[in-house]
Amino acid sequence: MSNKVFAAVALAVALALAAVTQLIPNDYFFTAAYTVLLFVILATAWNILGGYTGYVNFGSAAFFAIGAYTTVFFYNAFRAPLAVGIVAGTLVAALAGLGLGYLTLRLRGVFFAIASLALAVVLYIFVVNWDYVGGARGAYVLQPRDVPFGLPRYIHLIYAVQLVMAALALVVARAIEHSTLGRGLAAIRDDELAAECSGVPTLKLKIFSTMVSCALMGMAGTTFPYYLSYIEPSSAFSLSYAVNSIAMPAPRSACRTRSTVLRCR
Image (cartoon, rainbow, N blue to C red):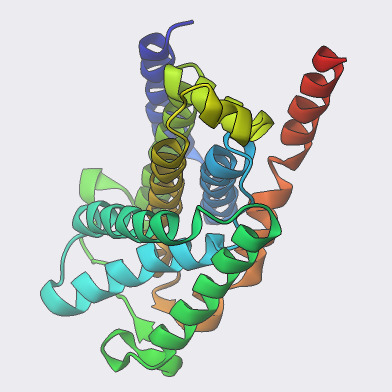
């Protein structure tokens, strides 16, 4: 299946599910499904850098929080709608990923992992002391009274948006995996020195992988303030985001590594 066909099918299935599940009367379904989809996006995003490229990122919570607090900033400044927060949060997280990649991707192995975790700690301290977005006491983001598309509650809209974003994350990840970029990233994962000697632009590919991964993580966090109507640093920077985003794609990454070793033998 080509990437274009997969993208069309994935988005069509997401829209169909979003429409059909609106008939479910129990609101708990939408709350639980939102959480599941949130971690689907985070795991898919982490796998682009950790699985395809082989660089373990412990800073998932930092980029998730960047997306969330970008939404809070635009809400406080302009009462911006959800769509603006999603676009802005994704772009800001991508720029943060560019900074992380440029500064730290010359490190390898555990050193890069420690650097990504240090970024999360630095950003946490920064947000705690930034009063405009609530600081340590947190901030409220009120859900609009008028819900678009005639939906009964705002959680229904957030669930549908999260479902479409999860499909988009899968489309992006598959497009990278089945492209020249994906083959370059796989070469870096298997043997970075050999890839660089073979002419693979390793630094550029690693920075690209980091930007895309971080952008998707930020995109996942943009709806979080509307989901809870309240956000504070401890919830946005929770270690569970980093742990779960690593644990979910880990079995597949392990199988991929094992198959590579067996082929080499």
